[in-house]
Image 1 (tube, rainbow, N blue to C red):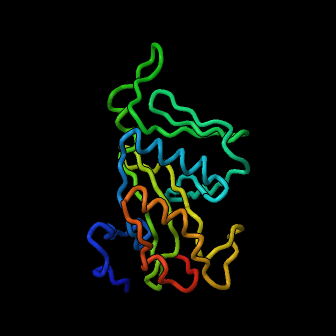
Image 2 (cartoon, rainbow, N blue to C red):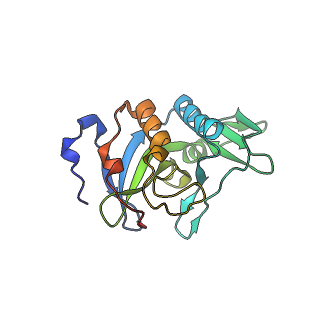
Length: 199
């Protein structure tokens, strides 16, 4: 990677890591308390449902889904946030879960189910510059719950590669950085690339 991270303020420095497939990735840890996760996920699906692609990305399967309409309902019960998209829905365990009625959740299982790691991320392409931006959640066993891909400046709304980057498509990423990382200035690293390349 050839980004000069030394010029950034210490609070803006990402955790530089490597995904399982060998791709470099910049991670920005997020809080995992119930209120923060609920606010974050509800914001993404209420305000940006038309802009995001989402689903679990695991070894051997990548679920990249889009909503065709705003959520019909976003509810919360026993630690689970439910996003109802009409013809289908999903649940995320983001808080304490005890189970309902006569079937309490075993404490070890409750810990495994609950989100234990949350992060903003940007994957780094072969040229050393970011090529995708998003948010990821992991449960207490280190299993991925969800990835949310944010609009990409190299791709149009239909994922067609753009002739020139459209940096306005980083608006949601910039807003999340400002809200959750207290980073109000745009990061020049995000705008260093010139073309889309698969990470």
